[in-house]
Amino acid sequence: MACRMRLPIQSEFEEEFRKRPCVHFFGHLRFSEEANYIYDIVQKLERITGCITIINSNLVNANFSNLREIIHDENFCDVDYALRIIGNMKLKSVTFHPKFKVRLDKVFISVNPRLKQDRISPGGKKFYLGSLKGFCH
Image 1 (cartoon, rainbow, N blue to C red):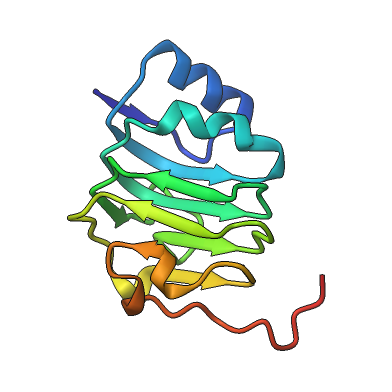
Image 2: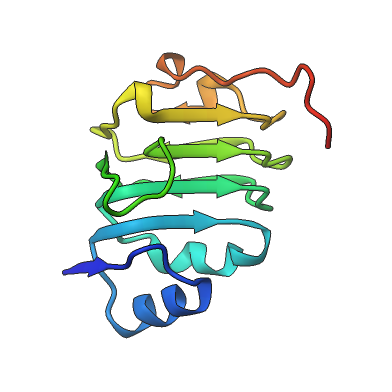
């Protein structure tokens, strides 16, 4: 089943996923400090058309082991990246499906001090993790 949401409000997003769990999400999926409870709801996702942002969350381990692909689509996303992981002070690991695909030029990972390349699976070494230099928190 597919779910379509154009820049959803977090409460609408939660309600939509509870009504009908989906495996293909169209839209901008956001995880932040106040949205961690939604994390469990999206574990069945296999594909995202749009983008995903994990920003300033309290997640320690982000496990998206069913997520096979993120396809950046400007019609469903208001940012230039398919995958953004920013400012997650506790985040230590990110796991995707073993055959996970995303365009590397559409990935932005920065200011996650505990996250190391070898803790991104699969293929963490291909992801540039950015620099903490000049970051003010």
